[in-house]
Length: 205
Image 1: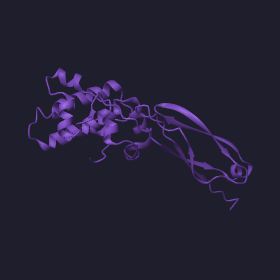
Image 2 (image 1 turned 180 degrees about the vertical axis):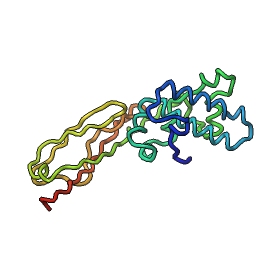
Image 3 (image 1 turned 60 degrees about the vertical axis):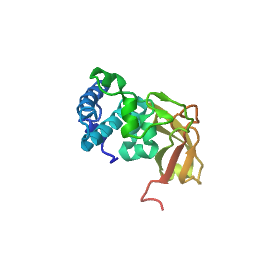
């Protein structure tokens, strides 16, 4: 599936409220539901896209990740199974006497067997890894010390302290274990990767 912007798919702007997101999804889900468009492949594809968009934007944790990393970065961290885990649109479909999401998703997404919307067997999995760039000055590299880095972790603002050894900064990729996304099904938290680089300075080389 093409990585089209989820907000655009629902006809919304970034920053839309949960109520606006739900209202837009409800309108489009009913319009493109397979029960209303039998045999229409374009409508089915559109239905898939708007359900994927709503599965992400209606979940605070996934939405925070999407807003932080954008479409490309988000899809590096979340598989389609991750996106739809815990998603259940049965209440909305029931309002309009339409087929339930379990049956629909099994048919058009191929999500049968051990995975079901809104439940299913528990699968333990490590949380998502995060990646950030950290740029330090030549003076910081020379003097050393500690630098605090703020980032968004599962919808919450957090900080980590990065130690910079005097005269010998660890440039390149660094790792802070367990500071990534929360584990799934009791799995361990992901890791935070920091790509450390020096800021250019005309006074030094």
